[in-house]
Length: 590
Image (cartoon, rainbow, N blue to C red; front, side, top):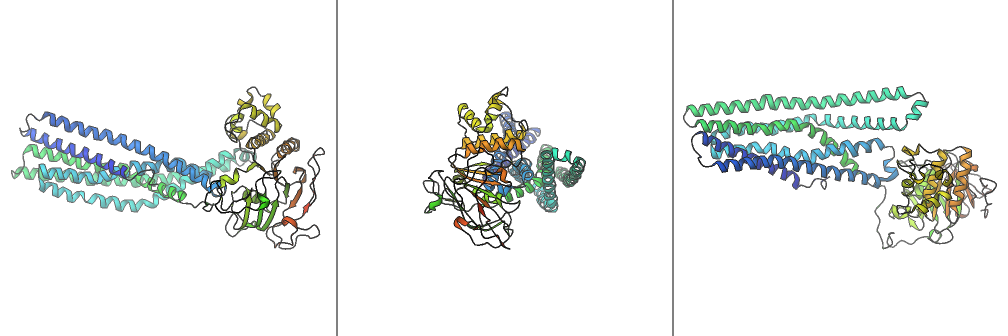
């Protein structure tokens, strides 16, 4: 937060305010002297003071805008970088909150840090600077009395800010809730329409919008109360007091008319920055709440423990297991050793789960919903870290290695393909930014999508639409397979890649996956036997809330031992069944 707005920025803003105020106060003093018939021949001095005052006003506005834009850029980069650092687990279910943080919260925090703190310091201190000029050039007695009145302002602002601080926090909470609900409703619009729940969703949005409107009005009401108190009570009191004191001093013969006019003009200069306090107060209330939200987000600990890079990017001094070493027919292996893991504290999905996928081996992981198949996938991808045990991917311990290093060994095809708004070529080049069109066509050919793309009028330049809506479900999934082919990683993870398509599309996708899996280590996750490629082994994942049964080779349950009450991590191992008659038979039975 401090890096976005260096400490010298507010002081520069305050200094510009001081320079402008001092130049204007001196200008009023010289005008008073001129009215009394003095100061002849000092036109150039007056013009110089005018130029300095105008330059300070213009320079202050430009500097504030420059600092605010820079702070907004730095804060937004910090929010996005932290989101990437937290990864899938740390940001799950927070899309609306993150959108609000990266947009509204960043804008308000930048305005507060770069456009509020410096000017407010200037506004609170400039009156005393002007009164100092008044004391040195016109009348110290009147300056002293006015200074006593001005001292009320900081106390007034500080007390009022503490009073309305909860209002700013409530405002940010309702805004975040409204943003999240709106984003969710837009993303699930099809589902809401099919379920005839659009009216209920609209009513919920209206209710949240009304809650947010009420908080906005409370915030504005507090701002208006401060403006009224400062403008109507304080400003009027200062001006009236200055006029009364000046008239009294003129009557006593202690002031000339020109000096009295100079005092009144300087009094207006004293009051003007105080008026700005009311105008800036709304920024202060909402900005402080936004700063607190951003600090909480940026201070969220990363789910990955610190690691020490060696020259190869791995943890220094780590000795990889032989079974997970890079190399061999598939280039890399996967090892899970007595892994216990879960998505929330105290709720473990896997308990003492072990699995060993040799380099070049193809293993299918099956089981009913909720037993932890996708949790295994998240562990292998380093999205989730085990609470105990070890996960090694190509020899890299995911708990002690940069996640980027782990993921560089993986190509993943998920059950829900995410396609970005843009062309087919742009979506493919996410995996290989420097890939030529020839490589793109080769990847599409492997995925069985080349003929479809060639039939499109714009070919590789064809738009996929938002979330790939211009493609069929099967085409979108095969595009994801082509993207994985361009990734060209030694380990392939297939997390139920056919769960979102019909049986006809499933056959084409499985054929494409079979071509992609050639020569790679493969971990397949599926619900149904028909969605499994020809595998060397099929591991059935049993209920994770049980104690582990006796295990056989590579952590699998012997075929003659049924899972007992309390079974944990593993189930039976059996030969795989090809997804289609043309698929190859299993190489071995474990």
